[in-house]
Length: 263
Ligand SMILES: Nc1ncnc2c1ncn2[C@@H]1O[C@H](COP(=O)(O)OP(=O)(O)OP(=O)(O)O)[C@@H](O)[C@H]1O
Image 1 (cartoon, helix red, strand yellow):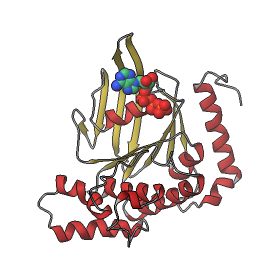
Image 2: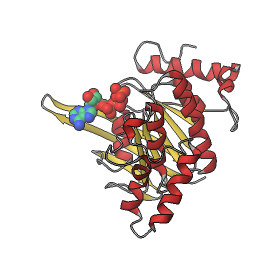
Image 3: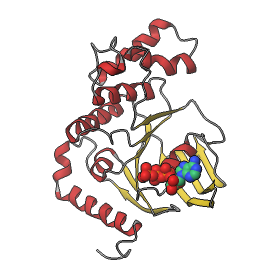
Image 4: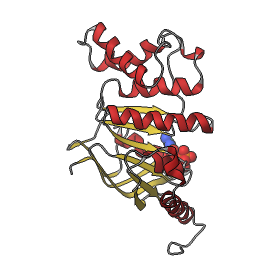
């Protein structure tokens, strides 16, 4: 299978007043076309830095980031992004917010086609009937649904999500996980998800990458073996429990709180 994303030996340090702060150290990650890659790791290890590099918002000190066989050196409109804070524009309706990327990336697309495309997604995530509302009239979960629609409305090659469900309550978060799987079933896209939630990583991921403590390298890769048509109940199977235990252990290793080879 072709890799859509190839991160090869990426090393990066931020220049701070106190001197260079090494954040990534020879990081290697490959994400095949259509795969969902969840990335977990200790707080502050460099996960968000990784998303900025893949999106082309910054370039690494050393190593290479490849997207679709092209070296990433600047921001690309074939990447969609979603963050913990949905940052929707309050002076635009939900529909107008979702359409925004099309105005930038597909200026020749007719207004009717843009509306059809946005409405198709809003319906898919259960927001039909809310398209004329302002962001402040929606709940946090609904805003995040709208933000997901906006992130994929222009059919990006890759969707990068940095803790998109982190601010939501547990029930809303689980709803959104299911919406996310449904979205991918309807519109297969390659995805990189940064999360602190190990259950989320296993429910949504095809592979889960555990980063080491800062400076981050790839410490462990888990292939998620749950069925493609998994439900929330799949998280309560012995198979899932074993994967979650492995990930918990790997995080403890990354935090320096457990030896690498302990069970
Ligand atoms: N622009 C910057 N300049 C200097 N240091 C930075 C900059 N951005 C991030 N850092 C530092 O780099 C380290 C890694 O930051 P990053 O946000 O990538 O980590 P993270 O794993 O996403 O963190 P968290 O899990 O807490 O969200 C942190 O120590 C952070 O303070």
